[in-house]
Structures are given as structure tokens and as C-alpha cells.
Image 1 (cartoon, rainbow, N blue to C red):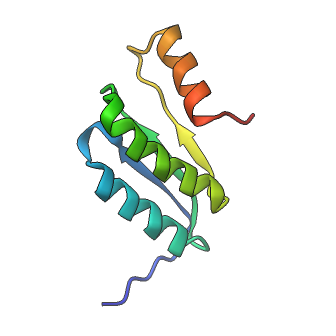
Image 2: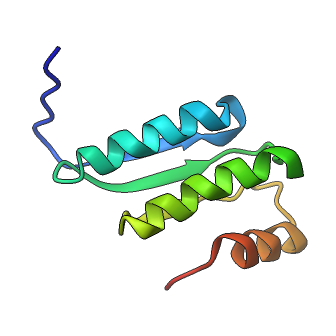
Image 3: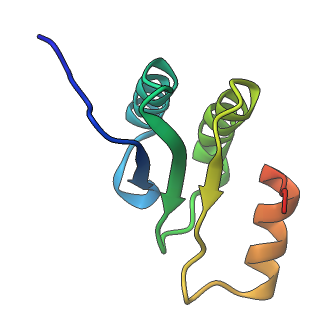
Length: 94
């Protein structure tokens, strides 16, 4: 199978609807096709449990290590506490 991408893309993942293994596989594809993928967006309105969070975090750290742009979109239901926790846990760059 040949995959051909002709434009630059941002991969966006609904984190509440995916398991950590699939999340990692999508991240690895983004890195593998980095000439066509300019970023990795994570969004959703589902809070991730602490047991799963470490697996998602390892993937986010992998993306950062591979110099992939990562954007985390917070839900309209997010509170200041949630936003602060995401920034502290995942890191932030302006």
C-alpha cells in the first residue's frame, strides 16, 4: 500500500475516543510523514483518568522529543484547575 499526501496537514485526535496504543500509532505516523504533517492537535471534552494519562503523556513527550508541533485544545467545560493541570503536566510554549 502506498500512501500519498499532497498537502501539509495537522493531525487532530479526539483523545476521549481513542485508546493510548492507537494514539501512539497515530503519533508515530505523524512523525514518519513529518514532511507532510506540520502538527498534532489533541482535543476533547473527556477527562482522562490518571492510569491512562501516563500513557498519553509518554506519547506527547515522544512528539515533543521528535520536534513535532503539539496543540492541546481544552473543552469549553474546562475549569481553571483543569487548564492549569494540563499546562503543568504537558508543558507550554507561546
